[in-house]
Length: 141
View 1: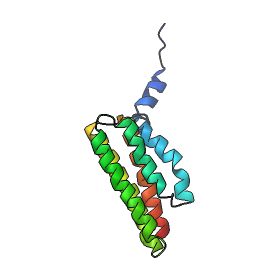
View 2: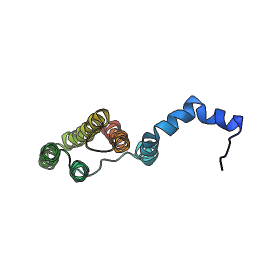
View 3: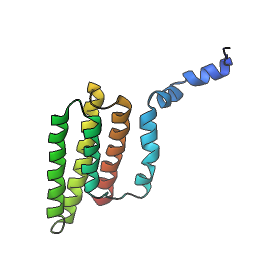
View 4: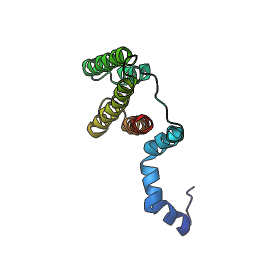
């Protein structure tokens, strides 16, 4: 049995705005989940950056050496944040924001190459990471 849509319903689903939301559903979900960051910006603990990158070890089984190398960079960044924050809190916060921004770029690389992780995940995670980076910068600087 087939169902037919009314011409009005067919037109609705073809409108550019609706098409954009349907085609970019990971972005829409990421923006919805991260909406609170715009209203109440916060600086997530630095270990969350390392945890996010560690998740790619599960997804990134096709490129484990590369994922381990990037994880070591994020671990070094976390160590730098821990060491610098007591003396220069703003520098620590800036490093955290840069780490989230770099992770958004890392997601973009995965998205463009369609490699390592599913495209929907890299789109979702990239948008989410970018929102965190931008809201940190807007709150602190």
